[in-house]
Image 1 (tube, rainbow over the protein chains, first blue to last red):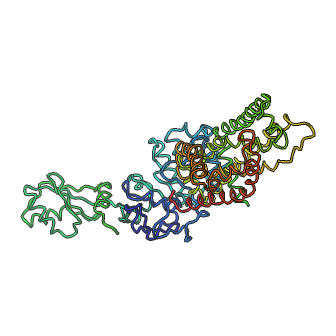
Image 2: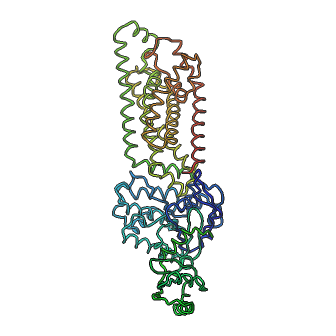
Length: 300
Length: 274
């Protein structure tokens, strides 16, 4: 494993930011750390990047306890871009290069070119727009072509073109065999480029695994009948149903992906003396799945 | 050794294009000759009045701005302006907090002791620069005010004493910045402590409690390395000689004080979340 997080705990006074978080990041993955604001994503990244100390638990980079030597091999962007405001973009990257030992002076120009900052490389960081600051931080993470990147909300502050570019960049890196660990509160972002995901909620792991498994699109059957209460009672007895809930005047019945059979459901209702007047198979929206996972707080 | 060179190089990269660094250094470079020239004129006025006091000063001490006494006199006056380089020391650490670059330095691969060593290098480098400015100012003052056969290097060891006192006082300024974290509050707190709090405490301890340990207060420890020129105080030769004699043990106290300040700084940064 590139990273193994084992039973991490972190408290800020009485606030329990992380409560026994464990997961593994396989090599060559784009690993999304997903969760609503305040779920513990940045605290988790801060611990694995050495700026916070955990109260209990440990993390291993490539099977070794986290250390400064390992951090030098990892390209990282944590929270906001942290640079010296009075220095130029290029000077700031010289400091990154001097500390990490990643890359050469020539590589600084290459990464600035890659994030389209070459023309402003000698301007002071304080004169950069939010998007340019973010791009400089990504350039810093890319310096020396590290095999592992940790990116906290990498598309923050970027315009739509910038967001698309960074997503393409991450996919490119992944194709070249790099491992990218990416925290985001944007489900869409993780869904589009993540191969694996861990979902955090209130400092706990809700679920982790391959993105397609964790965020699978369940089948939802939207049903209506004159007597909605009777329909609900009838569907509660239907085998293979995962969940049901009222959505306005309709009933939403959730089935595992690809298992909803409207004709069989109709036959089941008819047999119970209920005639559905509305029967529509819809795909469950990913947001709903995410919301369901994090709101229920079902801890894996 | 390679690691140390890397740390020095990185700190230099942080400073070399920092406008405030060069501004403060420039102001210090102007202030040191300026303040000594001002006091030289005060001394000349005192002597030229042909008063009884002036005659006694000349008789006891000769010209404090000629060699070798110039090294000592200029050291004292220059040390009064420690607050100028202290501004820079405080900004160098509080900037890291403001821009969160202290976190980035750790993320990029420094250990916490590496980061603190970087700051120690900053304070040492600045102390050396300030000491260099003092040495130039003292030498120039001595050359202008001395006959050709003067003992030019008799008190040149004051370069070392001045350097040590500067390092100790800038280290204390650094500690203020490290603990307070906000530049203007730290600057104000350091100046308030140095100009108001400590002198009042020293006088209270000396006169009210009749105790001698005022000389161990954080800034007094190193201030005692650089005695006040006799012509500025009461014309008491005995107390002047006592203050000169205090310098030697205070070298050790100052070294111990520096050790404590940096020990506390390292421990603080090691233990805290950043």
